Length: 132
Image (cartoon, rainbow, N blue to C red; front, side):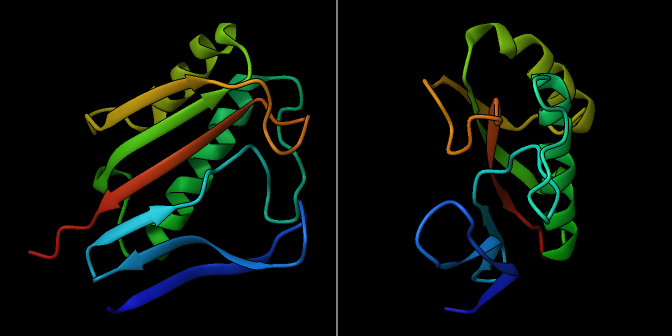
C-alpha cells in the first residue's frame, strides 16, 4: 500500500517515538492524529480559551490537508474531544468557520482530560481526496 507521511516529528508527551501529523494512504485517504491548539514547537495557542484552541487545531488540519494534496473540502469526518461540555459552543463556532459548506460527519465527546492539562480540545480528522 502506498503511504505518504506528512510532517514526521518526535513526540514530547511520552517515550521517544516518531509520529506523523497525517498519513495519506492508498492515494485517496488522509487520516490525521488528533490536532490541538499548538504550533509545531508545542506552544499552546489560546491557553484557557477553547475557541482559540479549536481555531488553531483547524488551522493545523488545513495545513496537513494542503501538504497531503487536498483541502478542508476533502474532510469527511471529525471527532471532537472537549474537556468540559460548556466548551462545545465556542469550539464548534470555530470549527464551523473553517468548515463552512463542507458538511462533514462529526462526533463530539466530553473527556476528563487530554494529554497536556493546558489543552481543552482535540480534533481528529479523516479525509478522502477526490482524484477524478
